[in-house]
Amino acid sequence: MSAVRGRFISFEGADGAGKSTQARLLAERLRDAGHTVTLTREPGGSPGAEEIRKLLVEGDPARWSAEAEILLFNAARRDHLERRIAPALAKGHIVISDRFADSTRVYQGVARAELRDLVDRLHALMIGTEPDLTLVVDLDSPTGLSRGLARQSGEDRFEELGASFQARLRAGFRALAEEFPERVKLVDGAGRPEDVAARIWPHVAALL
Image 1 (cartoon, one colour):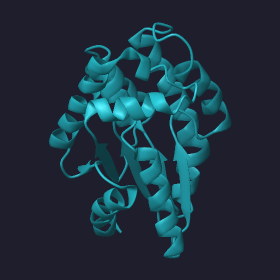
Image 2 (cartoon, helix red, strand yellow; image 1 turned 180 degrees about the vertical axis):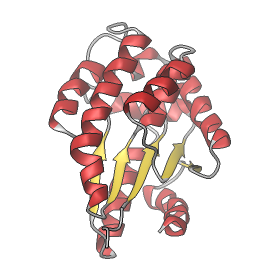
Image 3 (cartoon, one colour; image 1 turned 180 degrees about the horizontal axis):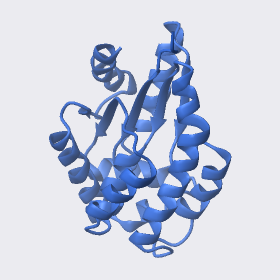
């Protein structure tokens, strides 16, 4: 008998929306319930992809064109998929990723440039995998931007693109929820983290 494939859940949203916190809280809840969980992130999640992450999230906002970013993200994502995500799914794990391909669809395909067709073609060629469930943590752009900048993480290249860019991100993620309603679920990100987590749980419970 073949092994049971795991479940793949991604978290998405504009910068500062709280998706990283929610990914961690969900992983903790699932582990407490007895599930084996692999919690990971993009860009990154594997040694090679983490090296590429530094190129993408640090430095001057104008460091790369949107086209160059698409290629870098796909290189990182391919390594992440091969070395972390696919092996964990094959073992029956629940994989929770803080961002996946939908980020490239929105950041480079909509917010930075109108390159969605290129993003989709490269995704089909090099990745060919979608999450079983994508949770978009939706928060008003000014609040998200102030949170993102307040972190002072040194990984604020995209936050430094400004308020109008963050507003385009939010609109892009909301549009994805309309485009893929079966997979992408929009979750109100306002309020305490535990309140947002309570809104997320019914979507996860329905998947599992």
